[in-house]
Length: 220
View 1 (cartoon, rainbow, N blue to C red):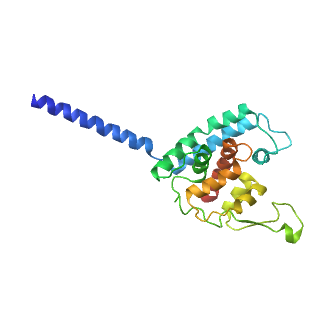
View 2: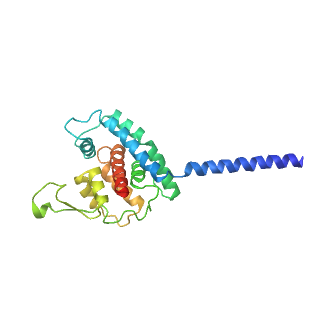
View 3: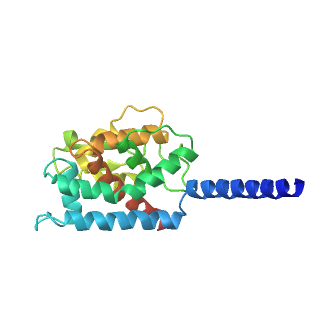
């Protein structure tokens, strides 16, 4: 009888250990390489969807900016497809938030978090007050357009943000009064700008472009 109980106890403990290991595996983050692959795969799906309605006279990048800025609309069917394609990013973001004890509940912030922070990033020091600061000199020069007159402090971060959300939106982001540039603060500020016209879909389009751009810069 004792031998039988011992065997049953061993089996029980072994099964619990296997379950714990499964939970730990499920909660683990992607590798850096797998993360970049995920962003590129999502972006590829986005572009297939957007090419269904992209005007012939616009590049795909110009079309994305026009959508995010509200100059062009997007059908509800396409928006649903884009949100479905974003699910792997949301899953990654949930794990990232859990591992770092971040409380981010709304969908747009989750999407922004996943695209702005890779697995190897320090969530509280990747960005700072100067990362998204852009200075419009048009009042002094009265010449050139928004892209040409922008002076960038922050190098590739500003370049990538400009490409992802456009000059007008970037000015609004750069004027943020945020004093703490934690992951929660940055994702909230980014998503507030990118969601203005397309909600979560606008954030998804912008942040995936931003994340891919940053990954290219970090590998150069």
